[in-house]
Image 1 (tube, rainbow, N blue to C red):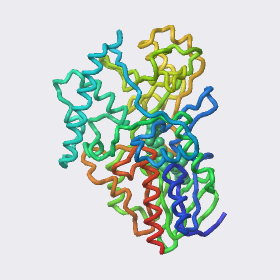
Image 2: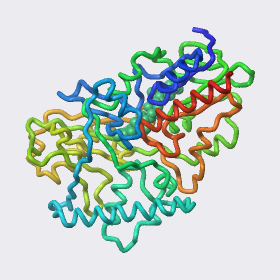
Image 3: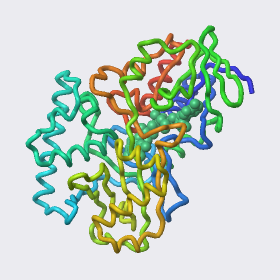
Length: 412
Ligand SMILES: Cc1cc2nc3c(=O)[nH]c(=O)nc-3n(C[C@H](O)[C@H](O)[C@H](O)COP(=O)(O)OP(=O)(O)OC[C@H]3O[C@@H](n4cnc5c(N)ncnc54)[C@H](O)[C@@H]3O)c2cc1C
């Protein structure tokens, strides 16, 4: 294959698909190339393992009222649930009472507010600096924070908490967020199984080297994860400038993984959907979403270094750990109720290498710098480039649209 076009878009996840649609609408002649055999990237709904869809990646419409996928879900007839799941806390022996759960909720909000206020005031320091050392809920806050951010607060900048556009609407997609992203992109032509290996930008015309041949173009849009860029899966000739590499060095890949357990009967009947948090000395950064959409299911969510190290050992190890933790909080009898289990492996996926991005403490404006084009020819999008929607599918989508409009202007 050898071809010529205006723009090569690398990656058919939320950012790449949104960018492709916007670029085509702007009159650009594009090639969208994707390394894997499917579209959607970190949005992927498994419809084979269980009787109901299971999102291996994104599942919640964060900031739902300002999230473009909410309107897309409405248009395509995808069901989602308004409102949050409640949570419970297990101390290793039993469940804490409602008063204590409420106390934790108050402490969680107050700690988040301190972190956000520090970031807004320009203090680019570890979020953990604002956990009150005298707060008995500190260890549980660390685990909850790691669950949201995919990395522990000791290494995450206050800027991420301060800048994310929260609306307190996290709505889970019943029919699968990954399936929604794929359905939205279904009419866009994608060259699958076509990893990009190199971008040569010596000459005015760029040369994009792929597994299927060379593409010549006027601009390229890179939407791959920061971990894929850091691993240099795509070689740049010449190298990217120092300021871009510096920005890349100030963002790291966080880790989040899941094990879904489908149960033979609804052991949580009557409790409704809820999230079970673990709160004992040495408890791992994990928790269980029980009874989602009133389904007979429990999904372990694991995060941070714990998730990275466990899931890198493979599905059997992750499932065994999930069973041990589930037995500890629900009693060993629950193991007899497990019909099937399915573990994710984002850490081992060569086209992702982790879950989502984290701004390192002291990372400053690295997200905006990552988004900044090089030489008005090499453009960047994807969740990591979004200062106020990072780590999310809608942040990726918006970054793709913004980049496409910038490219259309640059190529005019
Ligand atoms: C476990 C988990 C839970 C999550 N939960 C949520 C949630 O509830 N809500 C939410 O909004 N977000 C969530 N996210 C984050 C969300 O899924 C991502 O932020 C978003 O999907 C990223 O989209 P993207 O387009 O930036 O990147 P990607 O989806 O990673 O797309 C990049 C694409 O580039 C391709 N690629 C990589 N290398 C190459 C190459 N060399 N050549 C060509 N193609 C290449 C990849 O295969 C991929 O398809 C979650 C993620 C994980 C992992």
